[in-house]
Image 1 (spheres, one colour):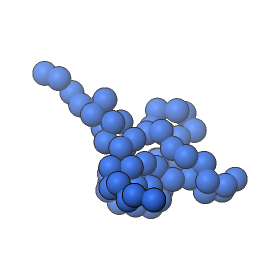
Image 2: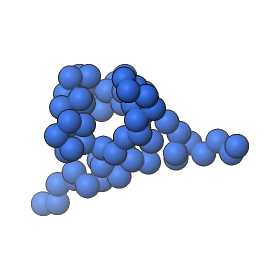
Image 3: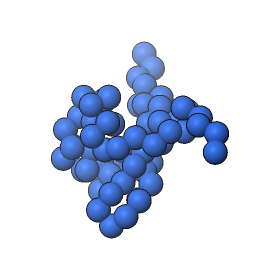
Length: 64
């Protein structure tokens, strides 16, 4: 399998550290469907594609 860093999976903790969010805040975004797309790996574990985080951030950019 080719390792493409654009689509590498990040844990919830890694995403929180990157964005400066708490885990409960990221959970609320997931629950309310206002956050980045995620992949459910098991009943208790999710992961995020780096490209999904970048797309979500781009969609939140303010245009003045």
